[in-house]
Structures are given as structure tokens and as C-alpha cells.
Length: 592
Image 1 (cartoon, rainbow, N blue to C red):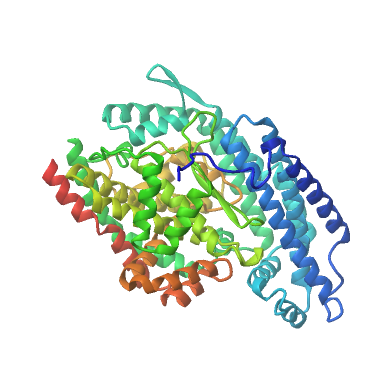
Image 2 (cartoon, rainbow, N blue to C red; image 1 turned 90 degrees about the vertical axis):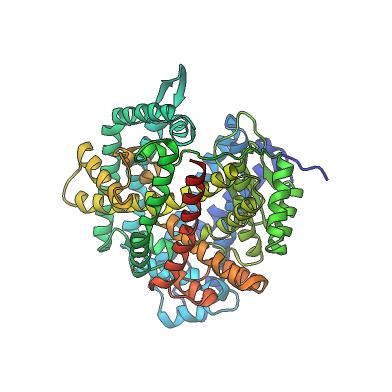
């Protein structure tokens, strides 16, 4: 069977952005949302009103699944053609529907909090709702920690043109900036890729210098956005009586401050091992110490290129030697044209996997360029798809997992394929390159992400007292980077607080530590899988299925037998991540 490089969207809604079936679907969804909103919350929960509550909650989840189906499809349309104006209009329509559904959920969550405890317990143990009881209980607990519902509604309304607007301003300011590099107009994103990936150090250095200068020009505006976003959050938390800025992100990721502190303590204690990697890399470059723009620079060389079919086959075959069920899913997704991989103009950047809850499918978007990293991206996104696949028969309310565990299956897949690539490598240069990409990931998750977390904590501590200037923000970032990188670099990126989009994403506060958590959690899972062998498959699937209906510590205890509040699991995971350092150093010394 020939492998298509284009995905199949017509099986979802035929006709793309002009689809009549999509238009009818959205029209009916709009009507149903309006009808449901008008009906309001049922009367106080009693034995007599319980059926009405069950029906209303099931309708809420049904509306959410339908909106998710439409939003995912529209997102695919825009990704495959960023100039599809009709698709952009459809996105606006789905976003409006999402805001309306969100407001309805806010009212229901407030009503959850007001109901009698005994009556509530009876409700969520009803056979129709017991599989989504975890999500409902979490919603009720959160509502009890918030302000009165009318104040929460007001705050949400004000946030649209306040809190979230600062994020949109940042997107516009940073996205519109263009500079000239090597005689060509260049976006800041393109400039960043040059100082990350270019093998020529002089090119990396000049690109980074221009990058810093460009962000210095934007820094005052970025500082306003960051200060005012933080001010809004601090004021909101004060009125909710939330004592810590980590309260919300920890709730969102379903684990405790004890777990987070333990993870970072282990990372702090062990990440200095990466300085050996940095030193060996610097030696290959003929310098004493790496600069910020050297950390991810390529070393070694993977001479092979892979067609999309070759990459697909390698991914499936590699995973098949480890787990036949995951491999079978990957083959099905490839053969059923669930993947958009063509390298063409007009597509958006990046890669992702999106779920379609009504059809119980996924779609994967990427631009495959024939490279080794492109093959890893394919494996990674297929892992996300597999995660959704094993949960496909669960109720919609039991499929909503957090960012902290979202990378489990994707990173797992990537590790399997990366290790298979290393085993199949043909020379030392190729092996050096593969080891370097693995250790670059380690530097990202153990150092770069940690610097972001340290900065953001320090920033909120200071922002509670006053607004911070550009120079003060630079100083906080420089201090955070020196701490996280163990003072191991020749120079740093003090304007990283301005250049990194993640600090401005208002829908996910502290958009940093879940990355490190997910990376290490997946490595811990992989270590157990390697130790146990084929019998681990059933436990792995059970773990993935429970990600939407358990706190993360409970998930790890049930399926891995580990206590995430204690250092042992994290030590095993970090040691596994750093196990390649000595091999890289030995190979680099051999090739230097």
C-alpha cells in the first residue's frame, strides 16, 4: 500500500471549510447550547431532582464533545492552509461557542459547590455518572475555592479585554517584528532557528546578537504585558484567598507542591552532570565554554535522509520490537491517512496531534522534511494519538488529562525510536549526533525549563511589591539561568523573559514545570517497561486510561508502585536521562 502524505479530513466533514455538513453541525450545536443555557441549572439536588441533574451533566459533556469535534476539525483546516479565510471565520465561531459553554460550566460548577454533600455523593455514584465522578468532584472542589459565581463571571468577562488581551498584544508585537539577516527579511522565529541549529558558529553568534537587539527594542512593551498580566492574576488570587501563585497550576496539573519540590530538588542535585556534556561539546567547537547560542548547536552528522514511507516504516518496525499493540495503532493511523506530512508552502509551523471525540479518531499535523528529527516528530505525535486511542471508549469527561501526563506516551514512543536509531547507526559521527540530540533534550528539561520556573517564581514575588523594569526583569532572568545552568555557560540570554512565548500564555499559568514533570515521568515509565518487558503492556495501557480520572500521585502509586513525593522515582528517571553523558564525552574525545 502506498503511503499518503496528506490527511483525510473529508471523512469527518466533507468539503473542507465550505462543508455543508459542518455548517449544519455548528448550527445545531448553537441551537442546543442556547436551549440548554435557557433551561438553566436544575432545582436543588434531591432524590426527586437527581434524574434532571444526571441528564444536565450528560448534556454538558455531550456539548463539550461536539464542540471539541468541530474545533479540532477547524484547527486542521487552518493548519493545512493558513490563508483559508473561511476556516478563520469558522474558528471565530467555534471560539464564541466555547466561551458560551465555558460560562455555562462556570454556573454549573458553582451550583455543584452549593449542593448538599450527601446528595452530591449519591449523584456522582449514580451508574450514569460514576465514571466521570473524579472530574465532577474536582470541579466542585475548585468552585468552592473560588469567589461567588457572579464575581467569577465578572472576572472572566473582564479578563477578555484585560488579562488575555495582554497576551494577544504580545502575540501581535512579537509576530510583526521582522529584521534583515544575510540580506533577507527574517522573522524572529526564523532568526532563533538559525542560532539554535546552524552548524556555523559565526552565523549562530551573529543571529543571536541580532535576536537580542531585536527583543531589546520590544522589551518595554513586553515588560508592560508581563507586569499587567501578573498584576491581574495576583489581584484575582487575592480575592479568591489563594496564598500561592502555584495554587492554580498545581490544581490544573493534579499534583502537590511536595511532588513538585521533590522533583526540582533531585534535578538540582543531579543536573550538574550535564556540564561534562557542555565541556565536551565546547571542545568539539574549539572553545573554552559554550554560550547560550551553542547549547543546542548540532554536532556529529546523520547522513541518512528518509522518505516519509521510510520514516513511517522505521517508526512502526522499531516500536513493533518493543510493543506490537502500539505498532499496530501506528500502522493503522498511517494507512488510514490520519497524518498530514507534506512539505509545502501555506502550512502553519509546528506539529501536533488533535483528538476527534465523536469519531474516536485523531489527526496528526506535521511537515516532514526527510530528516532524523522529522522521523522523531512522527513517532512523538503518534504516541499522542495512541494515548487518545486507548481512551476512546471512555466517557468524554474521563478523557481529559492534564499537561503533566500528556507527554507520557509521546515521549515513550520517541525514546523507543531514538534508541532503535542509535542501535542502527552506521558510524561514530551518527552516534555522536544521536547522543547529542538526547542530551539537548536533557538540557532543555533539566536546565532551561528550570530557569523559567525559578524566574517566574522570583518575578511574582517581586511583582507583588511593585512593577518591574526591563533591567530588573533582565537581572532576575540572568540569575535564574546561572542557577539552573550551574554557572556553566560563558554567557546567557537575559531577555529570555521577553522572547519566550510561554510566559505570556494566559490560559496556562506557569507553563513550564509540567514539561519537566512529563519528561521525567515518561522516562520513569520507560525504565519500568524496560525492566519488566512485555508484561508491562497491560499496566501501561491501564495507566494511560486512568490519566483522565486520577490525581497524578495516585496514578503513579497505582500503576508504577512509586511515591512521587519521595526522591527515589525522580532519581531513577534523572539518572536514566543523564546516562548518555559519559558515552557522549568518550565519543567526543575520540573524534576531537
